[in-house]
Image (cartoon, rainbow over all chains, first blue to last red; front, side, top):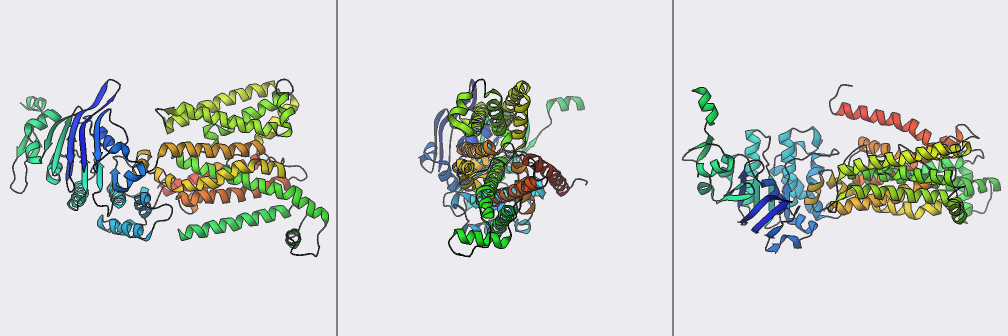
Length: 266
Length: 349
């Protein structure tokens, strides 16, 4: 469904992405993790066709990404950006309807109205459908934006969903809600790629995890194989301890004390 | 969607009422029944004549072109303002921001001041319309310069566009200042008059002159409503739902420049219409551009028609420049909107 083959992306002498390849199958949730500046957002922009790779190929649904027009792409691929501000105020249901924009010319059809209704119920935002978006809390706004991108590819077989740190700034409950929604979509056959900060959330919800460091892929695979203290140390330059719990398919990652802290305590 | 149609219908009725009122009031009074029978007579429906030929002449040759010109200019200024506010994602955007007005005034002032010495060939070949044509060309040149400055890698960056607008406006303003300094007393009066705006030059000829430009703007801009809604989410977000933001920017700027350039060329600078009208609609109903864009055209047209009615009757037989009037009404309305918005956001009133 998504095939990335040896892509490079550089701005002048700066190499932001170097020789990254990976595949994502329908029904899979891929989590991308890595330190700040590792190239996660750049990689997502490449997947969204916002920027073009300097070298290498990206295929979406077996076709090279550059052959798609923006409006065609928008019918089966939705993106939730990291920062979402609204310049003028819209009602929540109007905003979710914007997800359906690629599917109608001027007036939404009955199907669009129905989809918006269903998606708002599934994401639990029906209660504030008529509220002004700008009056909502951060967590509510994020769920509304997620509802908008789900509405965009709702009912699209083999739809693609890209999420850029969807849980940023949210409390634990909302983080869990957002990720279980993403998980649910993957279970329905969507292909979900998400940048995540929390390694434990990543390994809990993702089928595969990719770790980036300075634009390079340093690990890619199922969480159990990828989330090791060596990999985490290499990617984030911190010492971690792994805890094994029977309920989880992979170990929990807890940062151990930094060296400087240990010495001051002594 | 249903309620939008209703609101737009009400605004259309308001516009027709404003036009009807405006053609009837003035030095030569025309009553509603007289207006009706003049129209019926012209359409060949009614042969009975209960109006004077003077009334008919005033209506057809003076009032009607002026009212229609007012509607065309007001509608264009407001629709361009609403589209630019959407494009810039900034409620303070208006046609002047991207250099349309400053370019038009620079070229207009140039024609007024340098006419006798350097550009007399212009007035000789173009006659009375030299000023309007120069103003239109000036609007297009400055807007193009602003746009070129902001384009890098084939993309126009909105923040750079705003900054380039400020810079080019300042440059055009300084040259206008220089020319004003060189101007004679009579030229100064002309400059002042032009800068304050007026629909006094209205005739069927001016109306048909600007009609091709303003009608393109008025007809095409509403088609961008959905894209502008999407743009409210952000530029890349709009791209993600299939909007080609670069093409959108270029088209809206071209549309605004054509329409507003032509309007400014025949009516001078009329401020606040492009800025305030979209705000009124957004505050009263919805920020949805599918309402705000066509609604701005209708409301802007009504407001300018009524403003012109006041401008030409309040100190009759003298005429108040309409730009003064729109600023006197527009600025307090704008302040009121700011206060309401602040209260909505939970500020202390």
